[in-house]
Image (tube, rainbow, N blue to C red; front, side, top):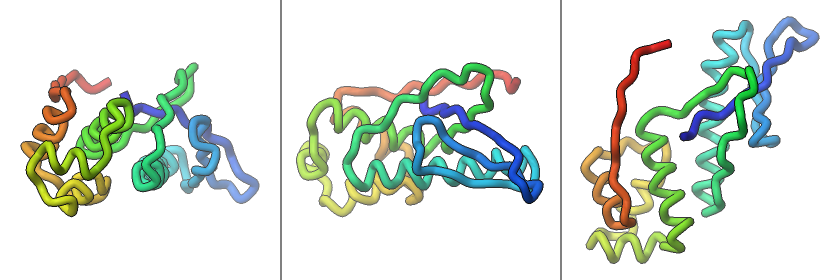
Amino acid sequence: MWNYPVDLAEDTNATILVAFPDFPEAHTFGDDREEALMRAIDALETVLEDYVDGQRDLPRPSAAAGRPTVTPSAQVCIKLDVHAAMRSGRVGKAELARRLGWPLAQVNRLLTLRHATRMDLMEAALAALGKRLEITVRDAA
């Protein structure tokens, strides 16, 4: 669900520039395609963190239309799902903390994308928002 397309372009200094159609403020580069796509994941997580910290709605990924895509880590994706459920349900951090019986600081840590969070805590947050986690494993392409 959080699989975002990227545009790759050669720069004048022989690096590969990465742009995100869904996040005009996010850019990165790499020495080659592989490095550019690896750095794109970090750039994506950084811009998504800014959206979560600012309590803004996350743009849904646009169609890939033949472009390569990048996806945040699985844990970040779950945290994005918690954030999206909070936004759609109009549930603030304090309300989620109340529903869970947690201190507000724990909810803040859960929503910090780069903070390692136990799976059971993320599942509890989703359940408090009327959601449940389903995981699917597929063959690699």
